[in-house]
Amino acid sequence: MLAQPGLIGAGRTGICTNYTGVTADLRRGVDALIDAGIALTTIFTPEHGYWGAVQAGESDGDGIDAATGIPVVDTYLCEGEKLDALLRESGVEQLLVDFQDIGVRFYTYTWTLYDLLCSAARLGIRIVVLDRPNPLGGTVRTGPGLDAANSSFVGRVSIPVQHGLTLGELGRWFNEVHVPEATGRSADFDVIELDGWNRERQNPADSWVMPSPNMPTLTTATVFPAIGLFEGTVLSEGRGTTRPFEMFGAAWTDARLAAALNERELPGVVFRESVFRPTFSKWHGDVVHGAQLHLRDATAFDPITTGITVLQTIAELYPNESLWLPANPGRPPFIDLLWGSAALREGIHAGDDQRAILASSPATPQVPASALIY
Image (cartoon, rainbow, N blue to C red; front, side):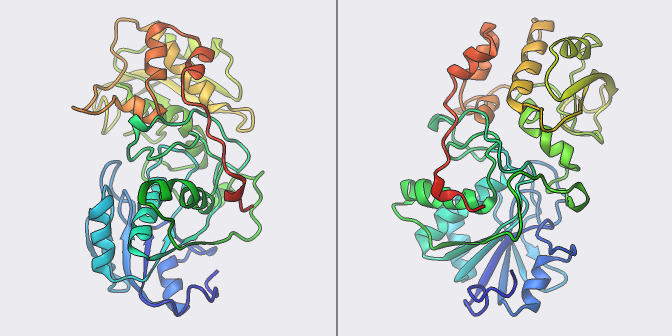
């Protein structure tokens, strides 16, 4: 990858990356690129900052990379004219993108790429993705699409909840279809392709570099399309514990929860009664008598069925409890942004079954064949 002639000699080069941008021997990609003769002049960072030391919804801000002296520019929550200004002021002629995505629509690194593509199209900057495997594999595409009214930084445009694409493939889809819709033109875009990645295969667990503070293992990433929906509820999704997105509950849930979920016989998972006290985030400091999801068969696991069923079960067991986080003024409830429409929230409130909820949700978008690389 580092020997690509299109990278070397392309002028002032920026890179949007973080600590997941490593070589096969886990060396920092920034250092390897510099040693290869690429003129890196600016490091741009997504949510969680360069080192991933800050929590969801935070970033490190601007600074200087201690090892290289290169300026670090925070892009988190920057879009449109503000992001254009950051890129313009940096003077970069080429922008590399290198970080580990996890293959789920509401993971924000996806939308950092999308926003950078839109800015690159407007400014005439070349943008190149240094591609990495989708840790969930490349064969499963599931979950609803996204209504335009629910566009946000957890879903700018309509893609499936679990999309089965690499970041490079997402970039091709965005640049062919969505970037021209947003800006009137495509960006000068390229992908440095993976060598030997198989769509049928997940990432090996022994090479996992956790892409954010609450994504510690490959199991966490696998269950995230299901339990990540809990971010739109008042329930703890396990943040503030050592098993985020595997443990969940509230101060008002109880031992009935795990038992009721096991009665549903969801494929690939079992549930265990779990008592925990989050050290931060929702129900911080309170004892939660909830449940832990144990992944038994990742191949059989159905994240959309699991996510809907767990939320339906909680709504049925605790009908007097408010389930959803309140909406911010002028915005849809956060669960609608995560799901892509109001269908999940309204369907559970109405007591609809899963088939009815999915039928009223935006259809799973079809990936253009031209976007596929592997």
